[in-house]
Image (cartoon, rainbow, N blue to C red; front, side, top):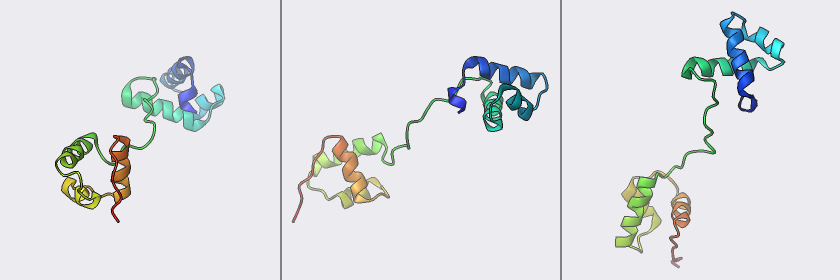
Length: 114
């Protein structure tokens, strides 16, 4: 995997590329996959650096921090507001469970209405 390569290997790939070697030759010489070599070269072409991209650690949240802050303000004014109405007020196009889970992570709880 490209992220596991050391800086020395990455530098060697770029040096070979600058000498005119094609990615397949570089891969054979360094005993790496062609995909890994092409990715390192593409990264270098895009950023000018051989440093790996920062890791993202999972998908981005559907509900932004700003929307959560606004939800807290709304719920402070109307604590018994149903989740469905809260979603409408915030303009969220997510299911009620998603909103409820996001608010639970903030420490907010809800009564179950029967």
